[in-house]
Amino acid sequence: MELLPKIGWTALSLFVGINYGFVINGIIRKVMARIQGRFGPPLWQPYIDMGKLLFQRNSIMHGYMHWLGPVFRSVGGIGVFVLVPIVIGDPRLAGFSEMGDLLLVMYFMFFGSLGMALGAGEGGHPHSPIGVSRGLSQMTAFEVPFILSIIALATAAGSFDINAIVAGQQGGVLQWNFFSNPFATAAAFIALLGMNMYAPFNIVGAPTEIPVGPATEYQNTYFSLMMIGRSALAIGKMVLFMNLFLGGAHSVLEALVKVIVIYFWSVFVGAVFPRFRTEQSVRFFLRWPTVIGVAGVLFAQLVRS
Amino acid sequence: MRKFDPDRPWDLTTLPTTMAPKGSKPHAPTDDRCFLGAGDVPAAPKLQEAVATIKNWFRASSLNVLAFGTGCGAIELRPLSTSRFDMSRFGISGAPSPRQANVFIISGYLSTKTLKRVIRSYEQMPNPKWVVALGSCTINGGMYWDSYNTIKVLDLYMPVDVYITGCMPRPEALIAGFDYLMQDIKKGEANGWHHYLENLEWYRDNQKKVITDWDLPNYSW
Image 1 (cartoon, each protein chain N blue to C red):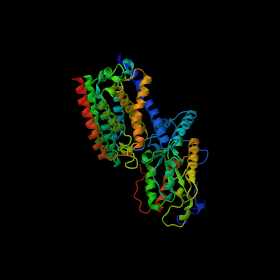
Image 2: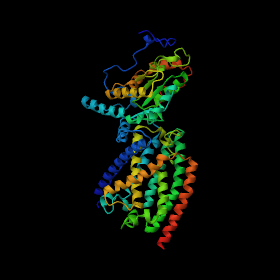
Image 3: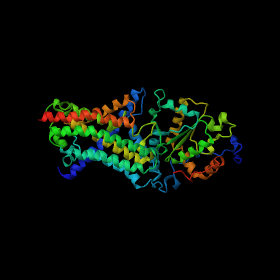
Image 4: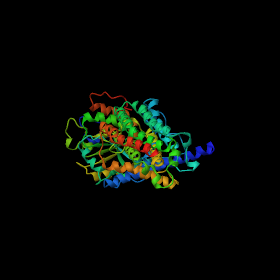
């Protein structure tokens, strides 16, 4: 496919993906409210919040690095989204997935948080660096089971290319990595809980503790930019998990359904659990999920030989 | 109108009209101080009015209340987020940082010591912002009418958009107050924040009369 139409299609899918993230966010608020016996805000509340944030001006300046924090964050989210194929065999919805492999996607996942950490520290509010240090330590911990799980998948497929991993899962539901390597799946889906930062791993923006964490000094347009970046990153991650474990998608509708199913795994876990402390979270990830991840790598090696 | 006497703050005849006059233009930030020198881009009046209506609808439908309880009324704010009263139905949610808040609820009595922190937090909130005064204490001192250490008339120190009377008002009254506030915002009449910027010197004079150890900057950005 030519480069220009490819950019156009990728931008369109990014636009749809970000909007889908907003819709899912509205559904999550409604679902959480119903779980707690409330009615909850209307489904389109994320859009209203977004509009309100855009119609307010910023009144403070903490230096250019502080401004760049949300920009890095959204670049990380958009980078993940455009490097992951959405529908199998459709070059229009494949993004730039043939130009980068799984390692680049993981780099972009880390990049956004690092950029945000650099920017948030400039705000000068003590809650920002506290949230940053909590987030980075938790991130280092959940990367271990996640990387082990990815090594297991790459061993089975013989490649770090996402398209190759998806191609290896075709030919029936039982060919999905979800069933063919349950250890790697378990490790990655536990790591996903940490990535999505719902309870019990919501230690970064811990409500009533360090209320919004790194974003304490961000307002209005910065905040809306962070909402966009977060939405792109969340949907990108879910599409990545769909490709890695649920055999990809053959149509847009299938992709939408699989994305929301994977997303609600962490939402429902978050609805019933209280919060871990930082060191508990780190210890949790480095204990059983890591063991399961190692088991996944050994299992993949056994099946292959 | 008689001159304001700090020894007789309950004397309502000395009160100036601190609210923006009725019928004033909706969302008319003529003062550059509102936006750090970056004023609104001039547009055709009809278009400006339509844009202002849309902006005001968005602002009214997404209110973020600053988590700052000054007095006993703060206990009435908690039930608002529970399943019985559920303020999130109206798009109202809490904001822990003044940078992300729109609404400041002065919940009940306000001691002179707290006033300093309230002023600081209020000025750090981005424009436009609104103040809801909860309980009789904010109107005339209430049961603290003769206290040496309590702010009796809140309107002298910061602009109030909605008063909710009672001691204590129940959460239903608070929701009704929010309803009035939303209607005012949609009509473009909740311009207390604008009035504050226009009459900053007058408010500062009043604030400095009660805060004797004044060490705040000229404006807490």
